[in-house]
Length: 216
Image (tube, rainbow, N blue to C red; front, top):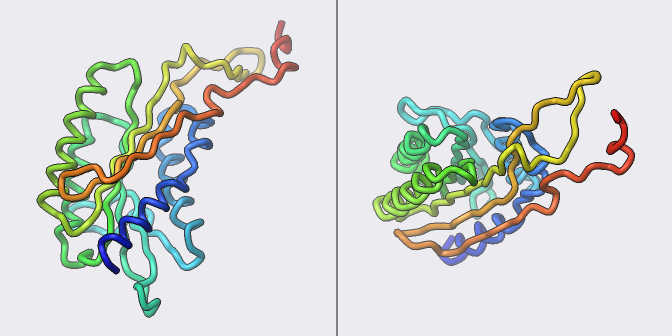
């Protein structure tokens, strides 16, 4: 498959990612985010499969290995690999993990590597580190130009903006941060080829009118 066809295919797939469900996740939601990326890949083609977690590449086991058919539909091969990370202290370690897969002969036919991170919208440190991460991903794409690199950013809003009331018995559960927007960058050879943004309509979750006076 030509590079242009790979770009069109992957760009189209990223447009189909449904961020909306993510706005209904609360807490760290690591497994929930992994689940949405798995759903994204499986729904794209009935012949797609995933490994969760991925088989090892050296000493690294990524969160997801995306499996799909070869162009002649003869066999299944690894098409992409993904790491999902909530903790900014581990972002760069996860990027190194993806590089391990990209450099491995066992995964030489992969089309893309995906790194999805959560960024707290009120944290200047998170914002600064994400900018540094973006530059590192671009650098990785220059070192390994044979695949596309996807950097997905999920912005978390502060818990005080939560308006969804949750009660355990007669006590209100302490609000949690929630994902309020998403952004995916498709990068190749140091350049951003496309950008996909989503301001989540379902965030924050709306309260049903009947619930407003439930515990008053």
